[in-house]
Length: 535
Figure 1 (cartoon, one colour):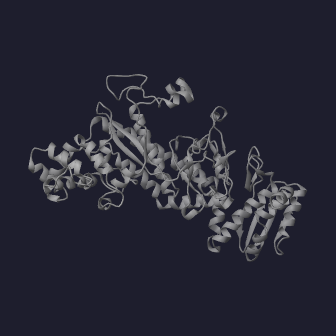
Figure 2 (tube, one colour; figure 1 turned 45 degrees about the vertical axis):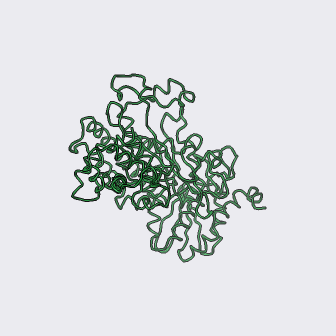
Figure 3 (cartoon, rainbow, N blue to C red; figure 1 turned 135 degrees about the horizontal axis):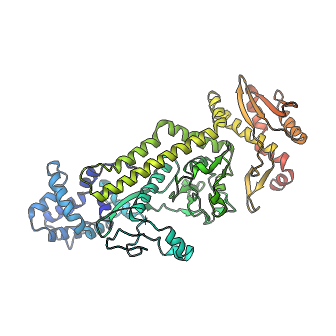
């Protein structure tokens, strides 16, 4: 039962419009239709989009005073009476309201009066609207029992899995709020994501029901529609995704990309530019997985959950990897700035306020549902905070390096952080193709579990790169050769402590970094493949 959604019309951001204002504001649909009734025009011959609704109003109301009240909804003095009439009529005349809204063409004068017309012209999908007749345990009350996932899951996962994933009515409503919250967190982080709204309805016994409604984005395609192969993003005109990795580690959604790449995708770029990443389906965000991730300061991670042996967890997360070290760290820097501004905390507070269980006038069932929702929101926030702190602590070294170069400008910050990864590429086994060799990578990638870690610090007028692990003579020779690219840059090997240090004076850093590029590292570590790729 979706009639309420027409009038509540939840905004994309929960703080945008209060419910009471919208309830009257969007009542102008009735106001315009009632004015048509009063005008005396031939409603059968009228081309006004609201003509059929006007005809229904004329038949519905016996009292001319009620029609007059509807025709003056915008009058503040008339507001209380108008709300009473709206509450009476909106469900009974819902089919006429729906048709009236759908009949408003793009560019019509009504478009400027409400977002509801553009909303109805767009394509949407409604999620978590479970079938009352498809329950394992049924009861005389329509919302009781255990609701099964849609029948399409039966062929794919079998009846046992369908039973194991069944849920109660309130659990499904709580999940709707959780998904909307995760989606709003994604959009707040600056990541292109679907427009998703919470839609209020009710079961046939009157029990409250919450669903999510997602708007289709023009031109959107899932990654599995030609954008992903062997766990890597493919295509010549596709945005690199490294800057998004920190955020999806923060949400720790084990199904973020999906086994086939079905949970994320791309939309066409503006003015013919690169296809842009687009996030959908954040349904498994903040479900307790973050504490099972061991994150390193290059934003690589290891899933320590025992479930990794039986479940395809974090599948295709490697889609975020083929990018520079700086792109990934800069994504975390941007998250830190948003965190410091308090925007994430504000969103959690907004959601709790929206579902305040102590609001006057709500039913006992609504209050019980809101208690469950606010408890879930608080639990999600606690995990979000813990996951964020884990990320910040894990990446303390590159963040400190970024901050110490604040006065030297963004180019120096980027080049220095990337240089750390270049020294690691020189010192570690690397590959230049995807896991099964199906995709040529743009960037060298250190083989899993084989990273030789480097750090960098600012010491007066120098940038000092250091490795505390004993390296082979061959690797030390490569490091000496790299330092020799720029006179004034020095390489030191401490035999006693088995440490390697490269000191780059800031005054020479620009010249050195221009020579010590990833392209240079590719040439000296993969000479045959480099020659083959570059003709």
